[in-house]
Image 1 (cartoon, one colour):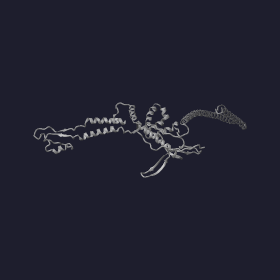
Image 2 (image 1 turned 90 degrees about the vertical axis):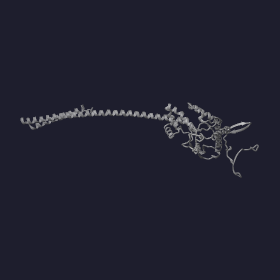
Image 3 (image 1 turned 60 degrees about the vertical axis):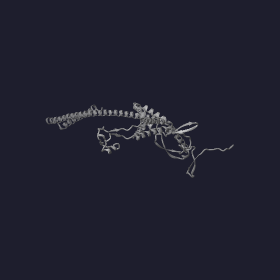
Image 4 (image 1 turned 180 degrees about the vertical axis):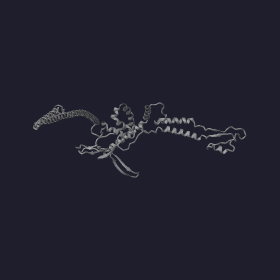
Length: 444
């Protein structure tokens, strides 16, 4: 329910494009700041009145004095007479033109007479040196030059103390000189910060839809990001139309100077601790500024799990580092397990090779013995057969002789030969059985 109403005022900024005769275009500025940013120098308050001045305001009088004395020195040197020759009257007789141009031309020879106009012997002509610039003018010019440097706070490096001075002492002198005019640099950073506030005030009003923006980081490297992006679930990512932002200005050395200082500080640490180079070697090369440093840093980062940190991920960098360390530890354990498994397999293969070798040697030994046994058995069988055949032959011969001598019947002789053959066969079988069962190692 509206209880009461009153008139109020809202401040807005308007801009217009105009000529000397008419207004061409007029609009309302979408931001709340007037986009005019001055950069102030010095500022003092005198009688409640603010007086602003720059670097050259109080250097005008010393500069005028310096110009005056330099002009005086130039005038004195310019008005000084040129070098003249001193000679007796009549010594230039016949050579007047040569002596008249002696101070403006480089004449190789100047001829003169040794006597004057009265015929008396005259001295050799001498040259008169011009008067030097006044010493007071030169001293005053040097004094005013020193005053001018002290007023502006910028000193000539050649006038600084020289000698055996350390690098820290030189840096201290340079910092002291920089602090003299630091308020000018500080005012510049304030103006830059105000420019940033004006831009931040305009960003949500201008960039109100999805678009790809090119940004530049603190290291000077460009990158592309998407703002006001609508996700599949309807959520707006990188929404610059909501929230409040601020500007932060950091005064000090630039990024390139900080890189040089970082390299100078890291090199002694890397030299004293090789383990540190394995953990942060890519960061060292990334700070260096020679061709190929980025390539070396990328190759070192590729083999360093700790360098695989995604700054744009929702997972905090500390958690990513812990996960990377755990993953690296697991990989090391897997490598150790694989090495142990390989060693066990190698030992098993060596034992198997030894066992196979022993089996082969035993088999070769048994085979050799079997071959020897079979050879002996064959010899023994052959010996038995030879004896049996010899006995049979002898029996047959005796039978034939007996048959011839005693007229023995033929059937009796045949039965005797058959009996002897049966005995011979039985002996041969017994010999073979005895060899197979008693002397063959395979049967054993």
